Image 1 (cartoon, helix red, strand yellow):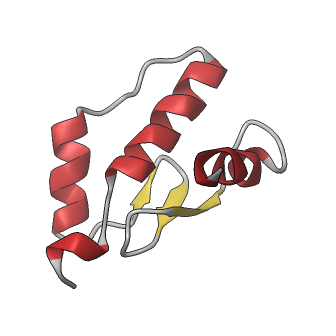
Image 2 (image 1 turned 30 degrees about the vertical axis):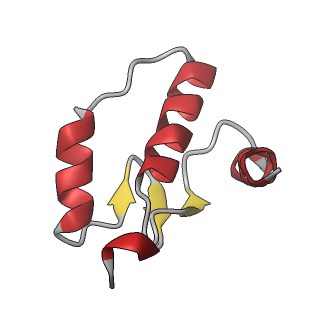
Amino acid sequence: MNKESYDPSKFLNYLKFRADHQGVPLALDEGFIMESFHVGVRYFFGVTIDDNGMPIHDREQPYEGFLEEWIKRSIN
């Protein structure tokens, strides 16, 4: 995987969006999340991400379709 092929900031944006929606702070430091991503962790707070840093499944989404709505908004 080359450096240009992934962008874990997409995942961080989703985590922040979900935390804001739920009215809770992001429970882990961003640096810790980024470091964990770089060593291969792909599951955080119920969210599975792909190797490019894009959330692909959220087991703890606030309601059905929450992740899909975020993906549509973030792409457009």
